[in-house]
Length: 324
Image (cartoon, rainbow, N blue to C red; front, top):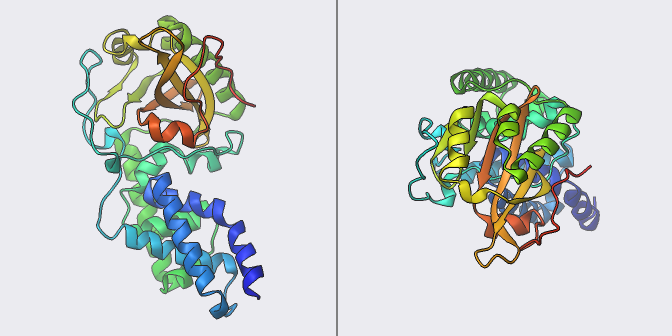
């Protein structure tokens, strides 16, 4: 295979490799860097590709090694609920923590895909993956999410099929236990239900209609606020937060986008001078059944809003409809 043809084929894998590295690393920015590193390594070694495996398996092996190197320091990204217990909604958060601590959102993802595909990029799933040793994490993603065979994964890791299957079973058991401890909500809601709920949520939040918001929230719904460790569980505490420390969010405008395969919104609060609205948070809203299971409000708008193609500010005419 010529270098030019190889380069073109490698480039076709960039998107799926970014999603793979994001699941491994918990950071979109780090995933982009890892994929660029992997593709450069692959391009430089294209002449040495022997064809003993598919190009896809070959470049995934390179990307996996890049991720394993990045994870060698043992640092684990997390969501606020992975670090401490819930707090009441009447008190403001403590000082923000380093951005390097947090799992970040993934731009895009098709909210209309089947539940199994949507589950594999949900924030809670990404957080649970971070509890797995790096090689187990890679094995589980490659086998259960991306559909690689045990033989392919064994070759990728330079191990045996038996050891690969053993690692997969351990990873599945750890993940199941983690979900049990976290009290994870049920399966993601169907796409049609999510769309209706997201539209209702956007409308209710923009009106600051507490009665409607309470009806939409699951009884054990969570609200978390990275880069702060503060998070709340339950309708009462979320309501206390919105009507207490977060009362400045009243009258916000929400601009729809998609993150981690779920509806998300750029939240804009009114400017101090009263002219238009300025970025405040990226809200990622996840659903279970016919209720909202979690709201994660990421505050790093300087990085996230350009990444999600959200405007620098909006005017009075801004709406909140959910994109098709």
